[in-house]
Amino acid sequence: MNEAAAEAMATEPGFLAHWAEATAGIGEDPLALARAGGRAADRLAWVFASGYQAAVRHCFPEFAPPPGAWTCFAAAEPRDMPGCVLKQTADGTLLEGNKSWVAGAGVIERLVVAVGDGESRVFLHVPRNSEGVDILFPREPGFLAELSQGAASFKAVSVPADAILSDLNRAQWFRGAEPLFVLSALVACLTEHARRIDPQHPCVEAAEVLEKDAAQLVGVLGDKDQIVPGLRAFRAGVGAFLQTAEPVLETAPMLADSWGRDSRLLHMFGVSGDVR
Image (cartoon, rainbow, N blue to C red; front, side, top):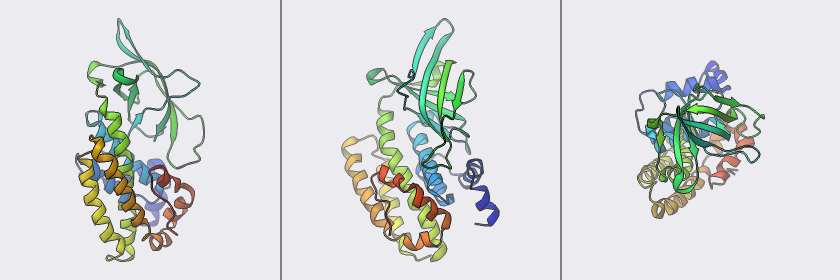
């Protein structure tokens, strides 16, 4: 990677442009998208963003943004403000309320908004530029700081019928898809750096095994009996893979720096971030 590209990737818009170029032509395969984004990433914030975008596309293909654009699955709600509700009026269905965490808030083009609980839960496709949508930035993020993280407020946002998806399983899919795709992006990132050191680096062979395992898990994300033990084994495999990564970090200063700041990302998904 040349100096100009590295400098551009220090900002979220810069990485988004780099990601869009790196993932052009990938098509509708979210796992391939996660890997391509991971190979393009030079820090953990962009590894997360790449895997996260793939997870949202896998779980909500009906609401996928155009190639080169990002979306967000907005599910978390604030404790001190009203959550999201749908209101039926003479003018149609309106979305009201708030979401407390929006990933990539500064650059996303669309949101998938979860509304309701239990059997009444639905998912909405809401373009960011819809009238009544306000993206807020109440605080500077301390974790994955390069990734803009905000909140969303919805005031009488019109939601057409074809933008409402009623499928309770989608949230369950996302609980498995997010760690699977983020960890797959991480493996791709480290492997890309390893190839620059040595095409025969131990990371490369280990990654091939994990890629096959991930492909099998994508097919059972909707099956709790299979995905739970499958993800457990995959996490263990990624943990073993990371033990080969120390030489990689020594030659990738941006990645090593972010590892020092943001390695709890790996703990969030059940993998030890300690490669020393």
